[in-house]
Image 1 (spheres, rainbow, N blue to C red):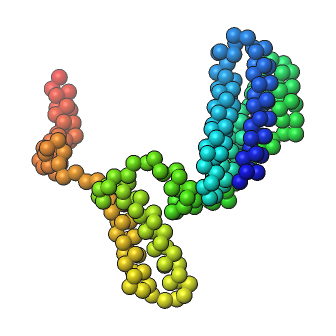
Image 2: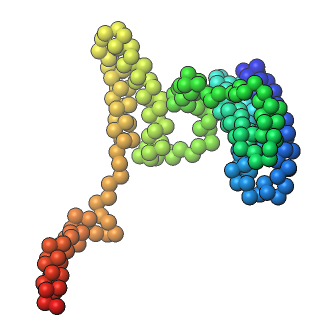
Image 3: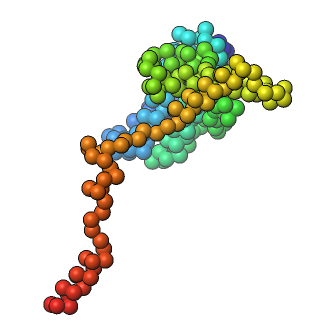
Length: 238
């Protein structure tokens, strides 16, 4: 965990120095940088991802006691470092002042691309952490308001996470042991199924503006046929 934090802190320090160097080169454009929107946009991408990267490190240091939070940090920081790299390489490839682009690339990324986006394996691990009852999910949802009303959709989803995870484990055990669920297991499975049915229901409205939407006032009272015939008769009369 601490190694991940230290590694990305060193990478952000390097990328910050790269950004400072690229910013100095950007001054060669003078006031033209204001109208070079693609270039200024890439500078903004670098700055915003540096800010978010340091924010991620701060958040991790405040909550590093949470089990597996380092996996979330690894995914987030991999994405930020990759985006910073691509923005800087975009600057060097499109910088309009002769020779400045190659110099920018040679100083910032002399060996070419060094960062890649988070792998599918990392994303799956993080997805599992935030969609099942874990310490990471508890941390990320601790400030989310959940109504106590059992019919509230967010309340149902919140309850379903724990129940569905438990039911899935029971069903997996039944398949593995080639047996039917016990009475207690069936109750949990039925509860999970009931919550699933409630959650996937869409809203339905019997009335629209106080009127039944199936009443006569919603039926079409015009037709293309008669109008076309009338227009043709009018044209022939003229």
